[in-house]
Length: 251
Image (spheres, rainbow, N blue to C red):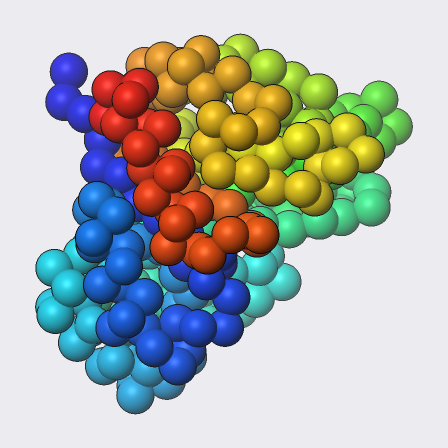
């Protein structure tokens, strides 16, 4: 079994990538990562800057993240997919939130149409969960409803294992359930409960990292992506610590 590549979400660096992307990526490379996930370029100048920084660092741009309300327009989705593909990226990560079952049904339709546009451009759309999709509405669990109402060959998942845990399901069980829909995964850790916004480096929180990684590898993913929304350390130190945790676990 070939091992996935390991990337990092640049969210941990806050606003710095906008001013010093080359410096950020140099630190990512030094920490031992193969690539990174960021946003989707909003202009040709930003696209060029991303491309130049990737070439200089030797890192792969694996894809970008956006919100579901931004992908309802076909032209917008097509432009996002085109920009991602031009940089060698493979994935468009999408997240969202609704307060009703009907909202999530509408969301499933948006995801399906957007995934079709992405696929035509060689890009895979992946839904990225938070904890709220695990909170039942009218007896239904939204994340499972979204998966039921979308084509498993078209709409994929980028599961966030920490938010799965916070949502009340074991990450290993969730990944086993959707093992054919997880080409990339976000590995995150934190304190959960009333301190769920207290994020930690991998291995420093409540998630059973070994069980989650074993289940993740059974999905044969292309990427494992470290995502830490915020840190009390220097970001470069945090991403090194998380990379070391995954390395100790075998990837």
